[in-house]
Amino acid sequence: MRRILALLALLSLSPATVAQEAVHGGPVRALAAAADGGLASAGFDQSIILWDPASGRARAVVRWHGGAVNALAALPGGITASAGEDARIALWPARPGAQPMRVLDGHGETVVALAASADGARLASASWDGTARVWDLGGGAGPRVLEGHRGNVNAVAFRADGVVATAGFDGTLRLWPEGEPPRVLAEFGFPLNAMAALPDGTLAVGGVDGMLRLVTPDGAVREVQAGARPVVALAAAPDGGVLAAGSLGGSVTLWDAATLRLRHTLEGPGLPVWSAAFSADGRSLWTGGADRRVRRWDPATGRPVGPLGGEAEQAPPAGADPHGARVWRACSACHSLTAEGGNMAGPHLHGIFGRRMGSVAGYAYSERLARGDITWTRETVADLFRRGPDVVTPGTRMPVQRVDNDEDIRALLDFLDATTR
Image (cartoon, rainbow, N blue to C red):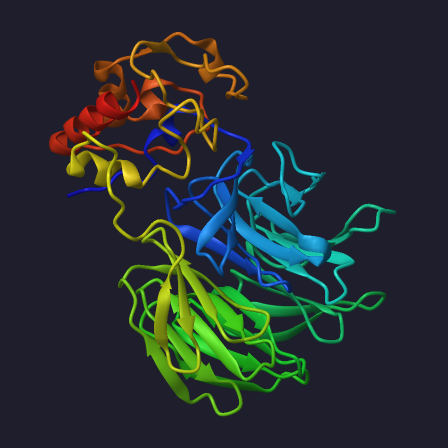
């Protein structure tokens, strides 16, 4: 059965909300662990989810970016920085609202990586416009623009000494000391996708050749074959002792940084792993990928602890078909079924059949949906899923999702009919 990735999120493009159950509507592209134990995830579904890992539930779901959210960074005071396909960087408070507290504009193409300095005063960004930028979050002058890579800049990090490092499609690892000429620390001949900084100044980089390489401050290189597929996610434990490498092949491997000895291979869903992050205390490793889940692991044993969000089966509402309830579950992060449940990442769905598009009071619709030129019926909702929002409502920023399984669509429509009256 083909599951819907982001069900009635197709009916809306939302700002932010508090959510009890959440799941991403597409691959999880980025993770950021905060010093206070909080966690943020972001993905191709344009959303950011702020989690309470202790309960496994979401504190808030934010949907503001005009495209996939590729990068996150945790800043002091519970602030989260996000960036993505729309080339914009947004800063969010611990309790986010509909709009970010600050927006950093300047990049001309997709932003794919963010890194915060140790004191949180600076934020570095890497972009496919061929540049990296260093932002002074205290105000003052505009960003410092780092130019020199030939092509996409795919990764950025602050070394322990505060120097910014970048890695890119041109296969180079570059250093940008402030007030000094930049220099190429290492060159590998293969595109580099990911980077992590260790406390001793060593930089770990992962490339399309599946290699994990450690580069010391003087340019010495150690390497190990981390997998047969490109390494696209890297994370270092806070003490620098363990490195986690995620690949497009779906594997996550844990390595001893001192010896490059393999500690564990994590048994996951076998789908591309796009992101990884250690908790601030080093006792948990979080991964995210194409299965849309944020998964938690014990790095000491390599064993799974469990995913965040509504993974467990929940009893469907009275009178609801279990098949339809399973299909609906993928979208419960974005919509409540009742008016009492209120607007979440999308408007509530009470009375959805017969309701004009864009008509729920108090909800900030996208410009396209606010036109209200479609009435939601069983037929129009089914049409939306079969043909996709890019065809039915062209010009929206909705994720392009389609469902071609007629049994799933019928089950969903029956479920909505029974639960939204």
